[in-house]
Length: 195
Image 1 (tube, rainbow, N blue to C red):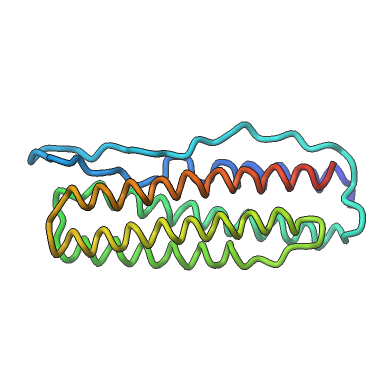
Image 2 (cartoon, rainbow, N blue to C red):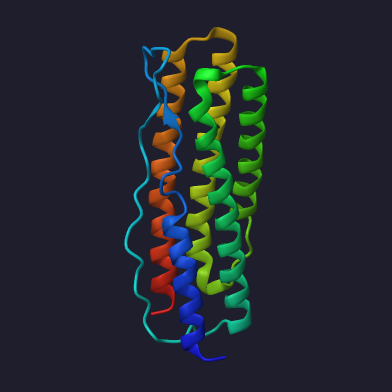
């Protein structure tokens, strides 16, 4: 397999990794909402430009195993992006919050946490060990953010205290931003590994 094919696959994977959280942070509700208030988005991770990989080969690892990891990572990143987006969208219906809404968003959070675990536990070839370590750290931060969302929803359904929910969501979005930055560091490490 030509190195050019590997690099093309790598760039596709980097694009998925660096863009996966764009627009996915949950909107924080307003502290003093009116009946017609629309939640406003707070911290939304910003994607960076896709890095350019060099044409050098990744010596020491079988190209099939490299492509297998890249494809696996891309697939799991896409799944995580989808489930994280679903969580964010569910917050848009906060004004109509009831038990059914709460259960729906809690289910989406659990699905997203499973996707995070899948992303965290990928088996990487030796050349991408640093990349996978960073991706695992990012996944842990995403899980911590999702736990904040979960705790905020549970608290809100019992207290109806929107100010406390704002605090939970703000903390969660900060964790998402931190995780997104770590993801981008992982993408950079992946590019550096094949230079």
